[in-house]
Image 1: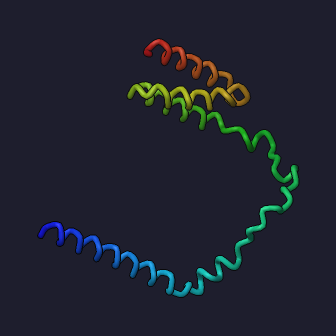
Image 2 (image 1 turned 180 degrees about the vertical axis):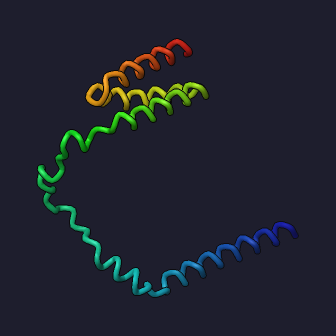
Image 3 (image 1 turned 90 degrees about the horizontal axis):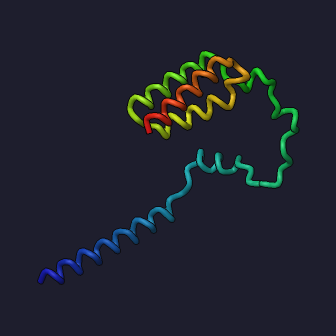
Length: 120
């Protein structure tokens, strides 16, 4: 008896899924969705933007010294909770630019790397 009930439930489930799929297939696309899809350009062979439009001045690319100090504080928090991987990744980001922004930040970052290596 239980087998028949289970079999009936499976059949009803499949029928309801098929019915739902048919309803989705028959539903018309809303006008705003049709307009959105019509405005998409799927041509992937467009030329690349000019190189000078992608270049920025050095000042625009480098973070401020204050931003790097905030990241150093974040690294200290990572060390406190013993998330040395996140601390190391953040320090790598800091060291990539800190010499160009503020050499004192580079010194502090290297000291934190030594602290991480010591605690591991």
